[in-house]
Image (cartoon, rainbow, N blue to C red):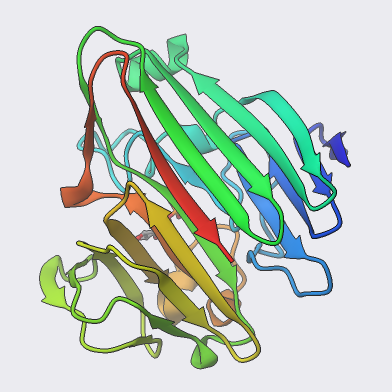
Length: 278
Ligand code: BG6
């Protein structure tokens, strides 16, 4: 079942339910803000105090950061780009079988986007909801000159508790520590006992998130960078739409093309960043 719905304030989203899983995707930002496999706790974290208001990014789920990840050189432009607060169009909804449904949302250049980023483009997010969550973010250059993008599928995972969380699969990978802007190398698994904000590079394998009662895997394609983020105590207090203890129940593993992994897309060519979570 795929149903188009609206909140009382008019905020539009698509609800998907099949025999394997259920999900909700907002038209603003093509923002998946709920994904749950039948009989399990939700896989995505969503802030209890998130805004569902046009113009404000939802806190949680999977924000689409595009066409830049992080800050733009022009600091007046929004962090993580404009796609997550733009209104996308639903171009296809289909139920492949009783266990799998798929939705494609599209964003194209507009007068507003051209003021922030002067290129003609088509951006499609293809989400497949089954016992796996598959997201394919396809950028097509419709312009006559090449352009460069950085981007991320900024997945917020729900946790039993941050003290139980362990990330495996990034041992020996170089990373940029975004708290110190130093380049470092990961030694062993990642555990969390302080703020973590890192852009891992040269990532080529599966990443595993072990929580108290569940193990999840993230497999990326056409991506060699992964951002790992938990704001910890002090930053959480400064963040929008997060309760003070929110950092205890979330962490982000972001499937990215960030920093050294920026991609140049030539005219009439496409690039698809893919993330599968299972
Ligand atoms: C992460 C960054 O990707 O996104 C963090 O590494 C940042 O530094 C976080 O705080 C959240 O960003 P925003 O714009 O959603 O508050």
